[in-house]
Length: 105
Image (cartoon, rainbow, N blue to C red; front, side, top):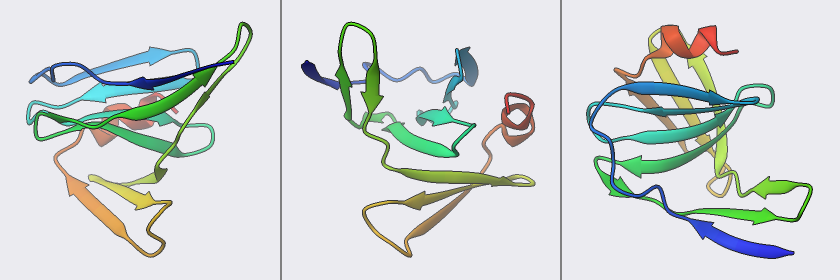
């Protein structure tokens, strides 16, 4: 089994949404980037305000596992992020493309 730390690379200061299988990657004009699993409501931030945040990924020849950092939900215009390692810590972010993210679910 190989173990790797994935770094998002330089941020894209452009709002984009890309789906890869069941996963959704999105970036914002403010330099935030996220990896989401809509089926299980899992989330990992890849960049914040243009600063990269590492994500842990383990892979084998046939599977891979992502070190999810929390869960998310969409409430109208709000993206709500609940951190796994900090129970009770909730971050609500406005300005994300929640309407388009709902379409990917």
